[in-house]
Length: 363
Ligand code: HH2
Image 1: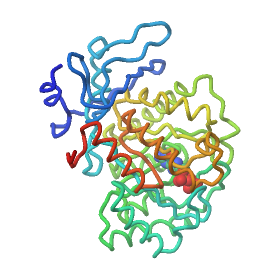
Image 2 (image 1 turned 180 degrees about the horizontal axis):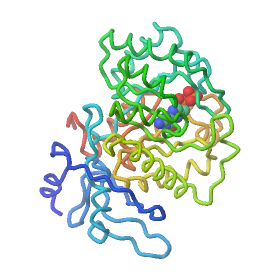
Image 3 (image 1 turned 135 degrees about the horizontal axis):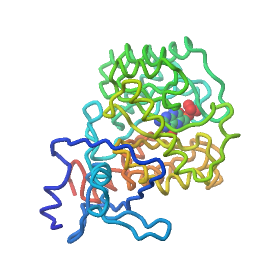
């Protein structure tokens, strides 16, 4: 493929041709992700519709040789390459930053810091300049966390969302909750996206709400409950187990009346996983692109970063978090959920400039 063909083949600015495909449960296609705009003479295609990550072959598995895009079934090749649908007006051809705003007293990293309305608004307006999406939560889901009363969770989140809309903060807001009543109150207050760490398993009313409202929904892999999940962190193969689980959750969502275009997948780093599991998922993140759906990666300040670097305090895990965010971007993840929006933004700006896909095209 020549550079000219590559440019015209690029998803940037093209009409969207979203192609959703559920992969076979046992199938695992690991496209080899490379940054930059493809390669002369190779059948390289954008990975997950991105402008900056391309793939030209899949990894060899089980002694089988790797396969190039044209050797794969057409639907699979298309699912790996097709542009993902815009998210609340944001194209997903470059990684988007989802800034975390926890309105909780006990979140593992920023608990208690943004509890008052004024503090929350101040942090939201800073993040509005550094992030593309705000993710607001009123219940910690860290390992061992106890469930929060629904009314209390609404009291923590809905007024802040309403206030930030009144203050003119317009970027898309997601509500990080497993409860339909909390999600509904947040949507009514001005939120746009539901981020459910149980992938619609916790509250049967959640799928109905998401189908009725037609809003984007993050389906994250998790097992058991936050209180007990680390006791269940056992898998024969964590990547296939997470894929199978997400496959089943996508099927359940579609059966409940959601549209494929609403769905975003997340492997759930740290949720019922050991450090070894997290590392394997990160190493093989590109294996989740064959669903043909956008991928969200939430690894910011998490325990495995502390375990690998001997950093006890989550707020001191910023550099490690940025390293994981860049790795996620290199694997074609479309949304990066992070606490440190400013640092992540700067790292991504440089990385995109080097890949030649900087939105500003300044270099
Ligand atoms: N991680 C946390 C919470 N929500 N949502 C998605 N989609 N993906 C994640 O990885 C994810 C998430 C846990 O992180 P945090 O919000 O910082 O902590 P806490 O749950 O203690 O509030």
